[in-house]
Length: 193
Image 1 (cartoon, rainbow, N blue to C red):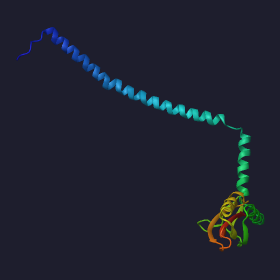
Image 2: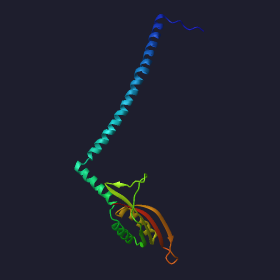
Image 3: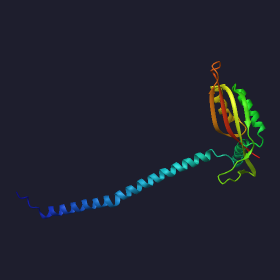
Image 4: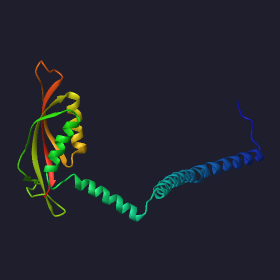
């Protein structure tokens, strides 16, 4: 079966239609798609910049004056400095006071001698011209389990000094007082001299 021969006009129409389709495809691939990708990239960059602007506006909206920021920093500095007292006597008295709040009896409280705190290179640690020292404290205490747990947490929060617990031993008391337990708590107490 042979096809119907095309006339000269039909051939021109097909060639022009093919050329238009080719131009359209070339524009699509080489102009429209790259422009669309560039537009999408610009949109993403713009969204990121707007988010940064909102973040900056939010932080600036909550900004304080320079003097307020200095006062806040001084308060934080004093709070940290208070965690490193120069005298341990006040802190040892505070241990007894905290124990009383949780019905915990102190059987013994044994602080060691002051030792300088050394860094990895065996050099003394010095903060603001003051030597950092450590005292090892061992406590033997009695009380309920809940009282001992609360006492331990209150030591870290309320003690005027920074401590780092090393060991905690718990043993049950006699059959006559099963709700009472004895605990040995050892910790390092840090101070500035």
